[in-house]
Amino acid sequence: MKIISKNWNKMDPLKIDSYVKNGGYEALRKVIREMKREDVIAEIKLSGLRGRGGAGFPTGEKWELAAKTKSPENFFICNLDESEPGVYKDRTIAKKNPHQIIEGLLIGAYAIGAKHAYIYINGHYQKPAEILEIALNQAREKEFVGGGIMGSPVDVEIQIFQGAGAYICGEETALIDTIEGKRGEPRLKPPYPPVSGLFGKPTAVNNAETLANVPYIIRRGAKVFSQIGSSVSPGTKLFVLEGAVKNRGIFEAPTGTTIQELVFNSIYGGGVEKGKDLWFVQIGGASGRLVSPAKMDQPLVYGAGDCPLGCGSVLVVDKSADPKDLLFAWADFFHRESCGKCVPCREGTFRLWEIAKRLKNNDLQKIDRENIEEILWTLSNTSFCPLGSFASVAWTDAIKMFEKEIFR
Ligand SMILES: Cc1cc2nc3c(=O)[nH]c(=O)nc-3n(C[C@H](O)[C@H](O)[C@H](O)COP(=O)(O)O)c2cc1C
Ligand code: SF4
Image (cartoon, rainbow, N blue to C red; front, side, top):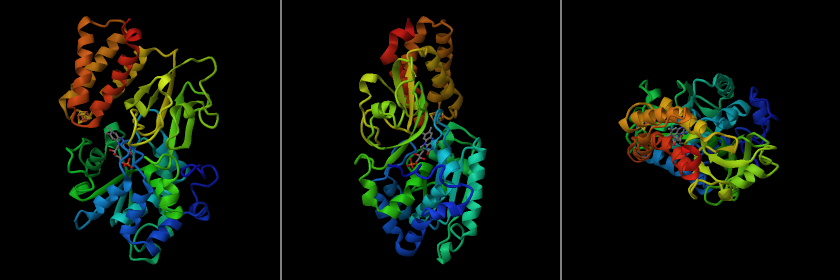
């Protein structure tokens, strides 16, 4: 069952006609000609679609809130920042089928009444940005984007905005601040963007994969979509499998697929690489939880379970990996990406990184053991935004799971 990757490598991403021949922009035509804005929102709510950017928030509810907040104008933003290490699914959609994102974004903008929409893409992703720009120009020529879409009174202009490539700029409020020309730092929430977002106006922010599901939902109907995968968060999900697994790359699977199936089934990972012994898997990037082989029968869903799915990366780690290297890599990433706005994360990630360096060099001090606990607690409980608590997740799980190996 494929929704997002179905036509990858079958269509020419540089030619809009290739997308149109495969039913592209039919969903846009349908919403503009046959559906009121509130009908579109009702359909997305009925589908059960949840955001694929990490938190799994129900998409239709977000759109409803942005549409209902009274304001002379509002905005829609597609989040294609994708700075999580080991994840490359959003930029791959942009490269393989850019119009699917654009069509989803246009439908979202129509639903909330936004005349201006943005595709916010990480500044390091030049090729996907160029492909999106070409696709946008072609869509504009066909009157799918801009003033009077398909001869209707509906106007939606889309602008590509290239961020500077910081992890925090994937967080929706930091992202919004950078479009406003400010430094990329998160805002205090609430108010949430659907109430007060870009320039203080109601703004819906959705992940690129979330939006790429929208044309399918409109074309095939919410009920069809809601019956795919798990009822808790229906549909399919793009998973990025990396590490000590036979088949690496992006795999689309129904939500509710277990970690076990994803790693071992021959249509996905095909099992652990020959000669390697599975140690654990990490779900959801550097900020993800660690799962031991005994607990791999968990379904991958949003909104349930102990193991947040995040953006959908699955890193398979085998026993040849050195836990000290892993701890260092996580701490190194977060101390570089901390935006510096709040003390617990600015100082905490830095101290953890210093300790990780000593651990790696077998120079751990007695006091470090106590400090680790305190830093992890402080990051997790007192940081201003989720990035600080993300920095503590893998460390906390690693210490629980293999304390002896780390501190021997
Ligand atoms: C530190 C941090 C980084 C994030 N990075 C991304 C990102 O790269 N892409 C993304 O879609 N969401 C990211 N998010 C989540 C966004 O804030 C937001 O929830 C998401 O874009 C909403 O879209 P969705 O509902 O379609 O998932 C990040 C959140 C945090 C806290
Ligand atoms: S938790 Fe980290 S990333 Fe978030 S505001 Fe504080 S310093 Fe910035």
